[in-house]
Length: 231
Image 1 (spheres, one colour):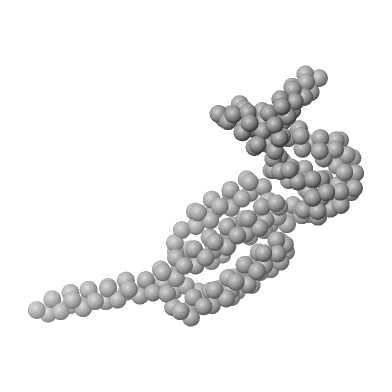
Image 2 (tube, rainbow, N blue to C red):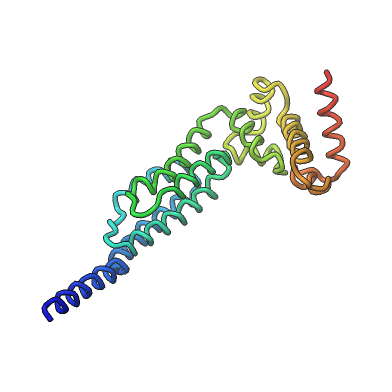
């Protein structure tokens, strides 16, 4: 009889522990939401410096999770934060940098320390900050390498990356040896050649993928690239 009471008591304790691990405290959730909204506001500015400071503030203000359920909620919140951040800083980071950070976040399982969950976000912000410190021609060159299909004008591109069109064209010609538009079409031709060699895309789909208006444009690009290669 005594053994049964002991077993029953142990069972109730185990059940209580299990239930407590599935519990999310309302006060904790409120604190997390408040801290997260401030961080989301900073991400909306698309300014790496502002976002970096907001990450530091978030780390100080984020309430400590005490249960498994709270750790799951925190991880989900930080995944959403990272996705917003990735979108916000897309123009200032490379696809490789974003992919590395995504894997880092994916590999951070439960239970895990807050600083490890925030590390991928910090890495994205650091990459964006490095990009912004580059001279204008390097910022634009890297951006074109990442977005060969983008159809923005040179003026729009200069504004996007924080420089003036005249300054951009002058620096680009001096350091790269060609105009921005020439470099952009070279990268598009390279991308078209790559897609035709490694995918089953039709020519019109390749044209769309590189920002060309027609198949004829793709033919001209490839012909020009082949002619340049023979020189």
